[in-house]
Amino acid sequence: MKKDLGQTAPAAPQAKAAITRRGALAAAAVTPFVLTAKNKAVTLGTGSHVYQAQHDWAKLPASIQPGYTHGVVQDSQKRILVHNRSKDAVLVFDEKGKFIKSWGERFAKGAHGMQISKEGSDEFLYFSDPEMHEVSKYTLDGKEVFTLGVPTDSGLYPDPTKYKPTNTAVASNGDFYVADGYGLSFIHVYNKKGEYLKSWGGRGAEPGKMASPHGIWIDDRTSNPYVLVADRANVRLQKFTLAGEHIGFVTDELRYPCHFDVRGKELLIPDLHGRVTIFDANDKLITHLGDYPDIWKQKGYPNIPHDQRHPGQFVSPHDACWDYKGNIYVVEWLSDGRITKLKRA
Image 1 (tube, rainbow, N blue to C red):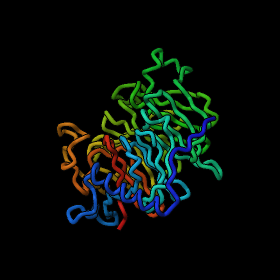
Image 2: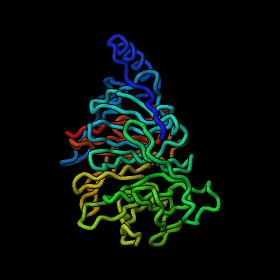
Image 3: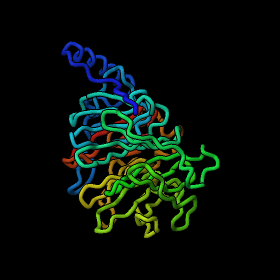
């Protein structure tokens, strides 16, 4: 086991004031979304799903500059955790955006999928790292529980560098499902002890096959939970039984789906090609949020110039989650990171 406590927020008022001043200067230098008359909160959505986009929600000290922001979850303490490619790979905020601490330097080069799971009174984070070819389980304070490398028992990886997991989903019995989204497009299943059970899928477009199964979720909105996969390069969602049998597709209103979150009967989908989508219980469109049409076709995407990152429009949503109040947090695939709170009106 390893411990990585990283940085914590300073306690002294003088230090806090200094960090606030330095943070304001740093934010002005690296991000266009400062509070000016031009960039005040923008209202998004329709009907009962109306939000204010707060691109300046996260208050970071000047010593921390996030890289590509890849994952976001909320824990039972109502803290927001953001996974990003930097030495401060796990950033922890309170619900008002105040920085609490950071840890996770070992993920600096490969920070990607981060999923939270509750086990009794405890919570854990599952990390999927395509650069280190591994999946790991940690406590919320950065203590390693276990790390799993290439699933050699599957017999699918004579070249171990082809294993590039992108996200993990955890079932109610503790089994967890790993999506090899940047590798050979298989789903691998383990029990709660981390023992290999089975694999299915592989690259293709026919039912049961996938092309970049980038996100994965145990969807329990029905009486029979199933595995929901963001089959990204095929521009669809694919449904499987927990045993791996293909049971259906969702193909409408998608561009390049990345991952999921569920609140009640509604499904939240960050779409890498410039918007966030909410589906109802029947996987029908409720609304698109922050739509930026054709942004992925622009030169240099996703790292377009700051003057093309407009308030209220997303460039490259990579993950999103709801909080307990129904607000949404969106993190984007941008080299300098972007964390947006969509405050529910």
